[in-house]
Length: 291
Image (cartoon, helix red, strand yellow):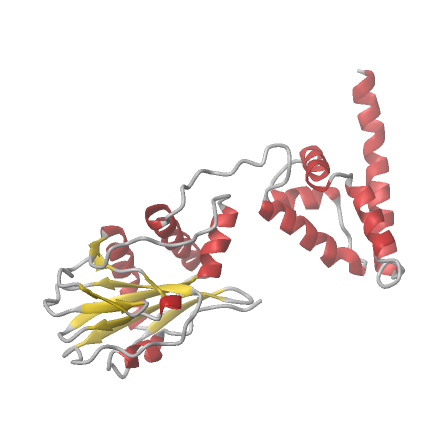
């Protein structure tokens, strides 16, 4: 599924009366994970920004210089707030579903981070943390971590320089980690999945099984490696999570889908390979029991 912010780059710049706003987009194979936009207005604009289309995500302006913000304000869910205390390093976190508007009638220089909810949810699921609901942050809150992250990336955004994918992955992890751990309204108690597969491991296991139904090779060791555990531990966790063994799970899948998919050569081949894999493990298990 594709997802991603829509309000970034020149479109975001035009909302503030700026014709050109360089941006950097962080992408994966099938989605836009985040967008970073540099906006510099030499004059500001006398009128509030217009409401933008609602989207599931957050926009986070980080001010890079000290502004004259005496008359600044914002509208969130049509409620006005006077915010005169902005300074260098100040941030705000605006939920784009609330269609925020702001008044910026004096010069300013900011880096905008636009992060979809789906990106944060993927981060929290991977970290086994609760899903993000609201992010609580008073406008003009001083956040030096965000400030330094913005200053770190600004030269690359302004000069449109290409960065290695590994660096961008780590940078996004820092953004999401700081955002969730600092501003999430939920208690961040790490969820423990004792004895079973964590949600991401369960998802990855099902993905691997589905991908290999076409007849490609599938090994228990590979499934375990995809989940970051040993083969024996994977077998135990699989049984706890799905209530049955891996071999029976595949057989049940064939039975449930007999009229459509189960008769294809790919699925029969997968079942046969899994059966052989378990047969090769059985003698070693029996020997360990005798010992």
